[in-house]
Structures are given as C-alpha cells and as structure tokens.
Length: 370
Ligand SMILES: NC(=O)c1ccc[n+]([C@@H]2O[C@H](COP(=O)([O-])OP(=O)(O)OC[C@H]3O[C@@H](n4cnc5c(N)ncnc54)[C@H](O)[C@@H]3O)[C@@H](O)[C@H]2O)c1
Image (cartoon, rainbow, N blue to C red; front, side):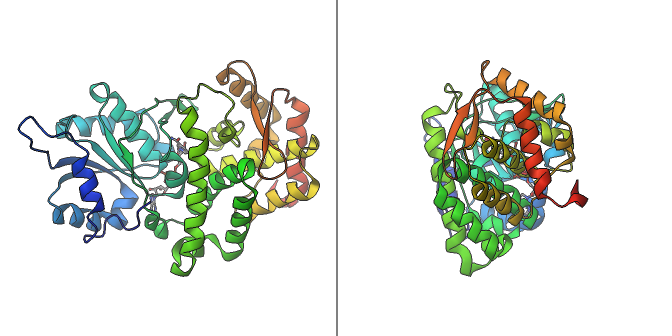
C-alpha cells in the first residue's frame, strides 16, 4: 500500500509506471500512457491526476469512462477497446492504466486481455471493494445476458497500486459495500478481524476511513483483509481447487444482485448471502445463537439491510444453488461459517436450509422492512 500516489512530490508512481514498460531496441522507454479513469474519480481527482502526470513528464492520454454496476457490460468493454485502438498502443512499452472502482478495473482488465491477445495493464483501484478484493486477484469479468460476471478472463495485471487515501471521498454506502467483503474474509478466516469490524461500526465507518485520527484502524482492517485474501488466492490463482472459502457470500449473491439490480450494490448482495448462510449454519449447529446474532448486528452496523425482497422467492434462491453447483463441477462446495472465523464446505444444502436461512433473517428484521 502506498498513500497519496498522486501527490506531485511522491515519485513512487512515476518511477513504477516508467519502469514497467520494456525499453525499445535503442534503449528508449515510452513516456506515453493511455489512462482510463472512472468519471466520478475524474470529477474529484482529475486535476490532481493531470498535474501529477504533467509534473513527471508522462504523456498521459486520459479518457473518462462512466462506470457503475449498470454499465458493467460488453458495450463498456467496447468503449475501452475503442480507446485503446484510437490511442494506438505499443503493447510492449505502454501498459494501459486504469484508475477506478471494481467495475472499471474489471472492465479494463477484460478489455486489455482481449486487445491484441493481451495488453499489459496497471490497476489503481479507488474504492474499498477495489482495494481489498477486485484489485488483489486476477479475475476480470462483466455481466452478460443477465448473468453476474458471466463473461471474463483471468488477466493478471502488471501491478496493482493500492492507495487508501482515495477512500476519504467514498460515500458511506460504498464504504459499507467494501466492508462487506472484509466481513466475508473475517467470518471464514479471522475472529480478530471480525472484532475489528465491530469496533469500526461503533466508531462509524465514514469516520474510520476519513478522519486522520482513525487512520491506524482503517489501515489495520485493510491490511489484514488483503493479507488473508492473498493467503487464499495465491496458491489457487486459477481456481483449480474449487473449494474456495473466499466464495463465502457468493453462492446466493450473484442471483440476488442481478435480480435486484440496480437497487443492491455488490457488497450488499454479499452481505445478504452471508446473513442467509449464517441462518443455515445456525440450523446445522455450526454456530451458536449468540454468534449468529453478532453477525447480523455487524451487517446492520454497516448500515446494510440483511433483508431483500429477493429472499421472499425461495425458488430463485434455490436456482442459485443449482447454478453454483454447475460452476463448481457438480458439487455444491458451499462454504459455511463454523463459529466466527472458521469454515466448513458442505455439499448437501437442501431447500429446507434455504428456508431456515430466510426465516432467520425474517425473524430478526422489523416487519415493515419485509
Ligand atoms: N475481479 C474481482 O476479483 C472482483 C472482486 C470483488 C468485486 N468485483 C467487482 O467489483 C464491482 C464492485 O466494485 P465497486 O464497489 O468498486 O463499484 P464501482 O466500481 O461501481 O464503484 C462504486 C462507485 O464509487 C465511485 N467511485 C470510485 N472511486 C471513488 C472515490 N475514490 N471517491 C468517490 N467515489 C468513487 C464510482 O464511480 C461508482 O459510482 C462488482 O462489479 C464486483 O463484481 C470484482
């Protein structure tokens, strides 16, 4: 992690970007770069980004791309491909740079992997989900024919540069969205990270990520989450082992998210999935009543409603189990929490479990919300 990448006095980014392209035969390195920037990020940081590149003599051709979940589709991939063609990339010396949230990072990673059979790219994620999740793996994807991330590739970036100072301008809702992915990792791997999340909800997550006095709390959460995430991803980058504990929260959520789009953000759908599977763990005596309710309180402490109208449709939820089983080579391989901070994989989720999961949430949320 490196704070304030775009502070003009900080040479780290320029040195990294200029060192990442191969020199030409005459030893020259290209200072041209195509930079794809999320439009909201450009509104806030555009002047700083331009000033940085100018000060470090990098000829940045900055293209602004609108990106959110409703635009995470093939047309946006084509927009990026067109920008690459128009810029006339020399793929050996001019890696593409993406600055934006998980959506733009996924779109550009996908487009770069297609352009001339693979153009190197550098990721600078600017959201919490981007920093703790989308920015640390090698997966890219966009939504297609109603399916979440249905088309995509494994496309390793040259480097991901993680700068938590971008989080100061993120809305509370998008911070909570990212905290849901941190909660995912905590629930399957680390009771102490879970306690850290509980503490952050008490302090207020906007304060945690924007007040300098809480910077140590924010950095500890982000660092520990990335560390635990990498521990899982690194030995299994291409997912040959289909039992992945970081798939926790991602069995029901793809269908819930696409069903509710644009009402639910990605992390909100993941949180709803985690509430549902917490109910399943409770039913199977994998968690105590107290532990299960601590999880629900943490979700609500993030300001996320664990209920969604999609939960009323148990046939829809069951179709998510069928879909996940197909992806996971014929076995469910559903990670469930065992207590807080540990997990097991199960292959025998039945409709009655799904019902118990929805009933658990229904019993805990105010009737007006259902
Ligand atoms: N590839 C992976 O391994 C992986 C992992 C997790 C999630 N994802 C994907 O990530 C996506 C969600 O990412 P996201 O939550 O970053 O969504 P996002 O990219 O839509 O960003 C959320 C919003 O924040 C704005 N924004 C970005 N940076 C900002 C900043 N610094 N300050 C203020 N506003 C800012 C964006 O314009 C957008 O409106 C999902 O599509 C999910 O599938 C991918």
